[in-house]
Image (tube, rainbow, N blue to C red; front, side, top):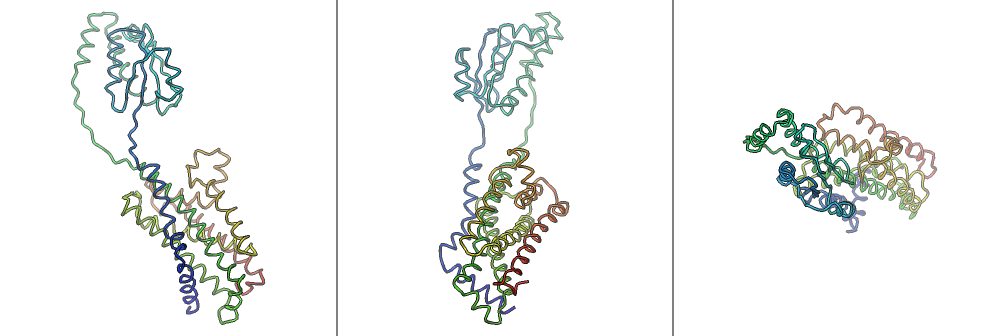
Length: 381
């Protein structure tokens, strides 16, 4: 135990004597927070720019347009039919509503028609407009059905509808989606940094083999098992500090709510730290020198980080890629955190936990086997 503590202390001292390592290992993970703040930290209030083409000059049409103008977060622009295509393609307008001649008459008959909605931005835009506009038109058309062609009766009911006073009480609910997105983006970047940090720390083994320090150590009472174990402990210390710094800065300085207990986030990231160490030892065991280990690390880390959804939601990728992501530990780590944010308890996610532990165990066992077959580390079994 004394030898392990000495090796841990010595490795930490030598590593962090260089200021660039302090920046790389302890402050690099914070870049993920700044990326998240840039992506999600601004004002998320969206203004929909809606164009209106009116071919049906009537009171009902004018009132319908006024209804659109009174909607919050909607800016209405009146334009000619000839300008619709240009405005839509250029992106100046999110959608255009065209009231053709006969619109008001169809509403009077209780069968609204002669209205067109044009957009190239999909259901996210059109759905918002439809939900309000169609409900308003349905209310008026219902009055038309009840009036049954009686203009006087319709005018009376329509006038009463326009003047009706409705009491509405609103309460604001906290929008957690932005915090969840920021957490997802930050943790995704942290996962990449942890994998790279673990790889760099494990490469110390190869570096000390190259400069013969490793073999001089083995000539003392220290054996390969003790040496490798000390490297694992150093690795875990560095990554736990990375997680602590990142989560603390997120919650206390930038006030990004994790929407899950702090200790649960730490527990999940601790499991991933074990996985990171296992992967780093695996790459080290298959490499003969530090350059080969670095190349192998890049070959493993960057593609798997992208495929697992650390930089973007995995749902946006093709179905075939999503299936590949299910075989990556990064994906299961993010999935566990996302489910915790959705309200699941850590105990109910035992399958996710078992899968993460299985990944860690598999990587460690393969690395141990490979080290045991290597003559240079034959004492590590």
